[in-house]
Image (tube, rainbow, N blue to C red; front, side):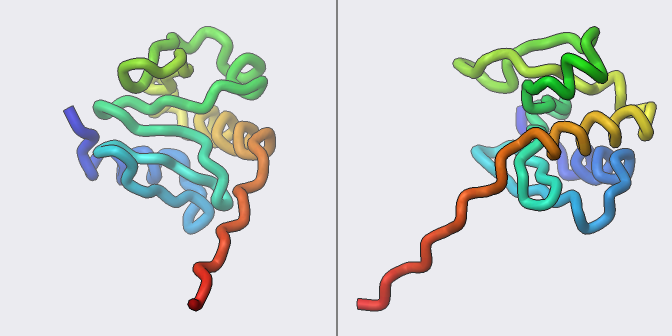
Length: 110
């Protein structure tokens, strides 16, 4: 089951970071980014936060499961969707811990 666009809009509204939070469709689901760093995935209308020390520190009791078959377990932050402040803290702290995005190479002009 693919994630509904309404779910993405709701998550973005709850996180409330304005233009800092972006999303892009990937494999029928969505990647959520803060300042171009992937911090979470929306799969099957659930919010999966990238595993990091942020989740262990700020939300250690979140359930974990794979976002798609064959993936490792990710913290599922659905229960934080009703607590905007806690969700925003988790997403921002996760972004702090993620490496900067790799620079994209410009296509050669041959």
